[in-house]
Amino acid sequence: MKNVKVVFKNGNREEFIVDSYYIADNDICLYLINNNRKTGMINLCEVRYFNVEKIEPKSTLHYEGGNYEIR
Picture 1 (tube, one colour):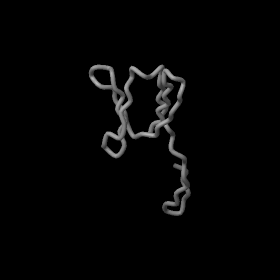
Picture 2 (spheres, one colour):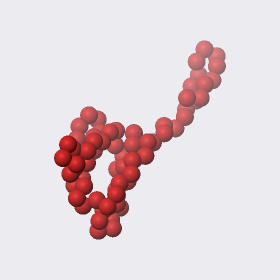
Picture 3 (cartoon, rainbow, N blue to C red):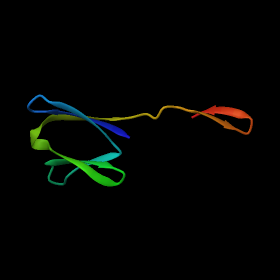
């Protein structure tokens, strides 16, 4: 999972939680992908900047064969 933070030229800020993303070959569009489907498209002509951060999964406690393990 990734957190895409976008600041638009008009000052608006948005955050999107996505599985993946890519920039189109012509460098004009940022495509957002969830569940192997395109779920959004952002015109980069309207964007001041964007940042992508990886979301670390929360660790969980698992019990296996008499031992506890944090994953």
